[in-house]
Image (spheres, helix red, strand yellow):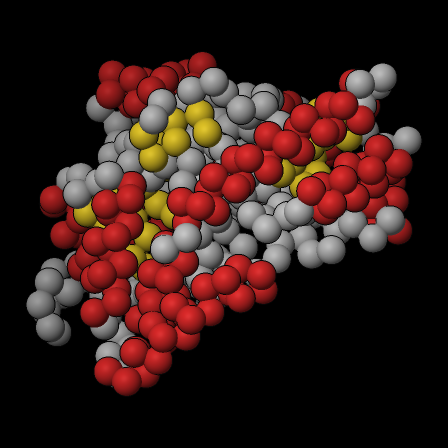
Length: 370
Ligand SMILES: Cc1ncc(COP(=O)(O)O)c(C=O)c1O
């Protein structure tokens, strides 16, 4: 069994992917070719924002968004300590300080209740993460941000396709960022990412930063980077968008089914496992289907012996990463993030899991959790 199966998806969309790639090879516009603009139109329409800027990765999109806000040395950006490293890394790369707010232990997302206390005169932005495919509570976060006149950037690398109160991830705040890393809900065949906003000035600035800060050829009013999405990746993503709604529906259905089957399997020992909690106002696209268990290392080895792959997202919260040691944030500072990092483990998840796959995984989880 695969942890994520990309081959079944390719077989389904092969004619469209192959034809679209062939078209790029024919026209030869490999850098910012017509497919990039077409993809930006399709994605902006899907998310419901005025602008989409396709870029080279979900890491570069975070960097571009922060650069567009002129964030740098002496600034603070509030984020979650329980995320993929890139979220905090891009803040620090610009010389700013990541300020962490502990997570809500039920959703693993930044807890808006802790937000106001973390705001200082140096705070320049809030960058919540929508982890595992479920959006953070953007109504609550935007309300605090609005009261303090702070911009909000959603790190929606894992939540593309999810909704919060009926609105799509990446369109929930001033700016949204996502990743097209192959294993993400909308994954390309290489690196990629995209930015979303309704703000015309920010969109223009982010487009300039994407190409070395130039506003016209060889004229640079600001610094930028080479942050472009390849035309070939745009072609692949356009083919994948043809089936994306269907895949999102499958993810939502399979995630709910996993939870139902696991709850049944552990009906006699519900305390042995913690299942994902999806807020009533959210839909979750399960970039990861992540549970909590006691003695995770033993559980992981038993699952491996039973032939079911698992992964840990993520074993170390950001405030305890060696590179952030100078922040002086010791163990115990963010107890919910630390407990999650010790206990979480993700099960195989992709839109092409069969009933038999689910039964195999659930049976193995029951065996491995003893
Ligand atoms: C929450 C989060 N932010 C940012 C990224 C970075 O995305 P990319 O790998 O496309 O650079 C990822 C990717 O794993 C992620 O999960």
